[in-house]
Image 1: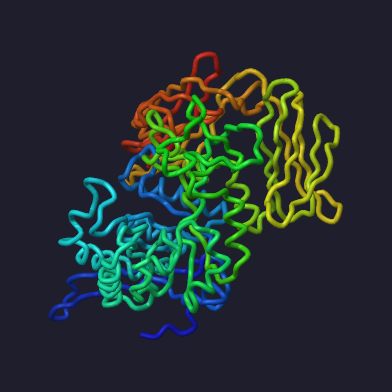
Image 2: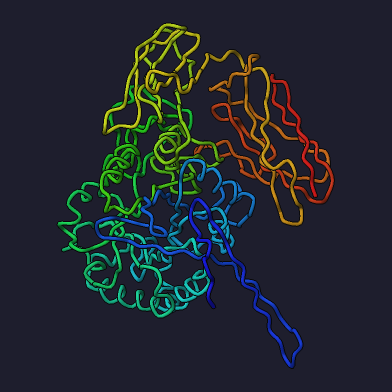
Length: 551
């Protein structure tokens, strides 16, 4: 059929059509099926990168594991939507599904909310990475699994590329040639409208047998940002995307001085864990800590941004996720890679991306302002839509600073004194934004912020309640760690709780949890229609109550 003058699907206007197919037998209606789809076109170019509907677009992506934090692996619509909303507000326009096919409904949300998608099939082929991984099933199941993924997902306008693997061991021997050609053919026999790639960890084309197969439509490079500069010389005529980047590490709200030297935790492949980490299992959030194979967020973005032929990137990772707690052993039980912690609270580098990836005006000042008298504190600010930023401490100017070409922040090293820290951004000498951080006093009360005050029990919807510990003036208390308990009056339950601390061994299903760096998330589920009265309390603090309506 022909659609005259179609409204095109895009990341900013994700317009969707519905096609209803009705089946009749002997003129009698017997069945009906609705297909949701979008109309769009795109192109990857060797020199000009990516374009969507004829317009240049940098792919600004993150890698996402399948879990929903404290909820675990089972899909929940409202939790998935919340994750995507937080990413969208950061400026993300693409998701790499790492490293398995996602829940089908997650792809529906990507269609609806305007995300480009790299749909990925395997984390290993016939060569194992771990003792009990997919390698033992690969011979019997890889064709069926790959066919099923492509057939299930091919009507999604969000999907713009198929990935047949991630850091596959067959890169390093000739079996990579044979298997790559087979897997690409499986995809192409079903769908020829999208490029097929593999996320490669070996950037030298002479050493990579998956690349040497000649079957890939484009190259996905994991890390190895130094190879971007000479990519066109080493891979003549080849299209490219940075399929996995950064592996930066951070604990939300924790800061180690000084902030301007790179720390590799662990320092090399000789060590499984960091050799001299912090005893409380924290990692500084100044964007200066990465795993040895990674780099800082700022350095990585600068490298991708400067080359138009780099179609885009996928940062590892959007959210913290269960497992892979680099750089620490147990009791660390979840990752430190996320731009956003597992509870959904942004780390500071979130605002660097927001200042670069969105048009909204940004001024983010950090860290908190509770330190020891006279301690030298590195104060940073991310900003955009301005020429410079001025910092004030208790009304006294500490000078104006502007970003250099290779950095996306400004910094002052300030001897701490209690009071007020204020940043002001300027454009053409006129004030644009002001941000203030005050020294917090003693913890006084709990404060609640509620997402989804009305939830549908039949749809398994959740209400997300954020608890903040504040002083009498309403300032967040950055060191607060009180044990918070939840009481629910009505037909509701606590579906999960999390504070964003990767080394917290409290059960994620308990109805009580410690605050971490002043914040805590509770996920509330309604069992049947009615009203829930939810009260959060902690010893020594004034409690807080909110009402949630369950349909």
